[in-house]
Image (tube, rainbow, N blue to C red; front, side):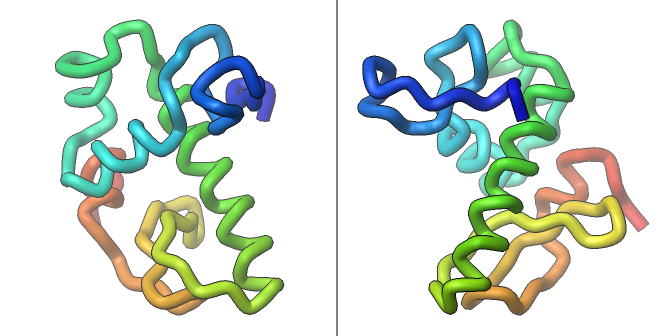
Length: 106
């Protein structure tokens, strides 16, 4: 995950997309609002790529997996069989708008 970096000098050490000051949290919030990957790139962050956005989701998946292993409950994005869904109340999941945002529609 070399696309996501943590630098204490940028946004107080929040995870950001490498080479930018764009936080993973900012991207995930836009996904949570139902924006597609392409809408995020077109309307908010034209310097990003689809791979950058996928890296944001994957970094959240990794963090959420660690939280679940520790028994911490928090809503987060997760991948299921290559599809993106939203974790609700810890490790339980449901399909969300994020799946649609990535173009992964049943």
